Amino acid sequence: MTHPDLVLRAEQAVIGAALRDRQRLDDIAHLAPDRMAHPTHRAVLTALIESRTSNPSAPAAQVPELIAQRTAITGVTADYLRRLADTAPQPRAIASYARMVQEAAVRRDLALHVDRLRTAAPGLRGPDPVLDRLAETMRRTEHAAPVAKLNEPAPAPYEPRVKAAGDQEVRVEVRLERQDIILADLLQHPEQVREVSWLYPEVFEEGPRREVYEAIAVVAERGEPVDQLTVEWEVYQQDPQAYEVTAVEVSVEERPNYLARLATTAVVVGAAVELSGEMMAEDIRTKLTADFAAVDVTSRASGPEPKVDLGVRTVTSTPQVEPAPLLQPPPVQQASIQPNIRP
Image 1 (cartoon, rainbow, N blue to C red):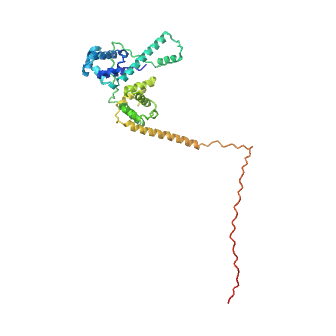
Image 2 (image 1 turned 30 degrees about the vertical axis):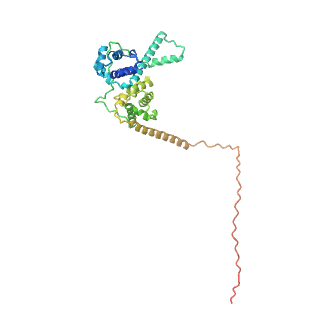
Image 3 (image 1 turned 180 degrees about the vertical axis):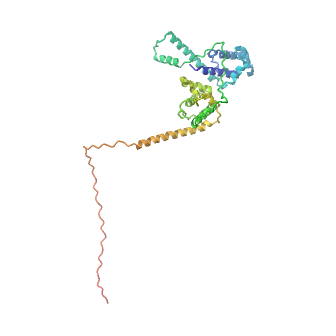
């Protein structure tokens, strides 16, 4: 099952977006209020849907008061509903948040059926081993269902972790800090994602940074909005067993929420493009250096000496080369000796 905290945040994102603009309810007409996990959220969504019929012309500023009066739930005041509206990530992305809510509801239904089957026939294996493995996988990955009673207080609106005054500064090495800036830029300015579509995940440090980048790429490729909630949801789907992937240990004393830190990191728009090019060039240089080193070691390695078979005589014919004829010196003419006759 999906982590309860993520489910509550997705439901609050749906309600907050609808509170800010009730016209957004048309985008989630397929989502029934009973698909909400928390009863407070079910009641608020029901009141929102009904208010469009009973008070269609009510201004947006008065909607929280109308919903608070209609629900009459302890803790669900106008101020509470305004806080939900203020913390909604992206109202235009209400359809994506509704998909998350629907997905979580389907997982709860499947887990309920698996639990019933396991209770009715404990230890009995089904005829299909694939179904057996599916049931076993769901059993290992399921969390306690976030089932709340009607008399329980409404869940507090989600707020990212705020750094206290006495908290230590997050110190990471330059290489990892550069990766954090890229992720922060992509998370805060999703339009930059398409500008770095050539950047492969292996450039990032293995662990949370690589998984966050992969989640950002998947969400963007699906055409959904890239924000802290959608990315964290995708990170969880990649590995439900390691949901704490969003908590990066930067020191012994603290474990800040990694995605919350990325969402609040001050970055310049376009920093991801420039730094991604530097990272790619550095990664290519590193790989080429390693490849050349491997080739050089291979070429320097001495191979085995060729074996000589003494039983076989190899006769090599040496071509006979005729020596060039010696050049004879030119003949010397003998000068005739004439008698010295004096007159």
